[in-house]
Image (tube, rainbow, N blue to C red):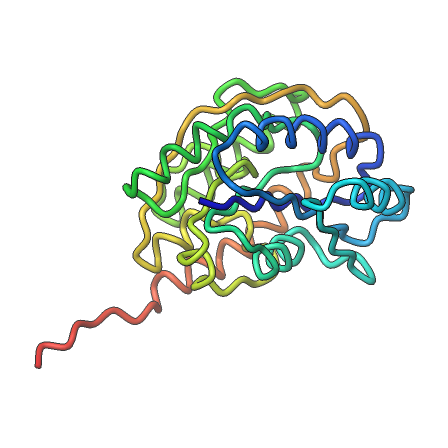
Length: 235
């Protein structure tokens, strides 16, 4: 088993060293080869310099740097296409995902019962406005896409790479990974994970881009669901 951890980021300089150290500590205890891919989505702080210093000391760290901000879906896509692992772990760079959850998610997917394991932040450590906006967005997504995923916004996930690469991504589609996987016939499980309070920096998301912008993306996903080709050849 080999594992690639893909971490998109935008202006998360204070979080990068503790994120790298905590993630590396967990990965070193796995009985597998591993790599961490940081995808810098056009940061304007000193994050790129910090990442370069980390990569110079650690051969298992790779950095992809965008020319300009392209969005989280694009960052995930670039990481996926450059990952070498059999399993791909996704995380946020804000230190709110707990790397200690990674081994548990990997064990579940290694059993062969699914191609995607999603983290469920059952106890959120976020301000009230962020929690309520996420709850509204999650409810709307599930209602219109006929889903029952309890936490579509949790970035902590583990994918089977060969399944993931069959998914074509478009802007904003990172919010709908479970639905996209199911549309292609893959199995999805959800498991409780930790959610840590943010120590440094500020959230890049608010009610406007959590609910209103994602609603347009949701309509696109709904269209794909209803227009997906479904047939079996009899002879």
